[in-house]
Image (cartoon, rainbow, N blue to C red):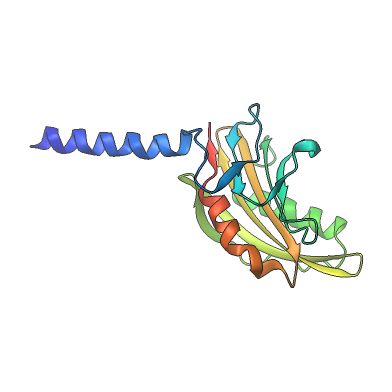
Length: 172
């Protein structure tokens, strides 16, 4: 009996792990990452993939430039945990973004089974207020950053899509 339970648990674990490593495109989505990326990143059909930037990214439409991006970077010795990431990101945003509001309280979450954090912030550009959401996770020697950016008045419009995008990130 114990052996059967262990086999079932092992099979479930393999199925869950395979879901995060699968290269199949989820229903209703298109790939926004390229083969060389260490992850698979998908966006809903209807979004426009923009791989010409060197970053896996997409925007909603030509009339609504709400956008998402996903990047991987080597963590390095100066950034090996969430606290260090938040500290460096906050300092960088404060020095480069006009009207930067400061990072909201971070929330613990997951991305493809990895422990992650999410937080929001605001900034202005060209007289417009923007809202941002970042989800960050560490995996191996890399950290991965998902960013959603939208005009403040459009931010809530795409949160359902953003949730679906985050749920479908896969590491290779």
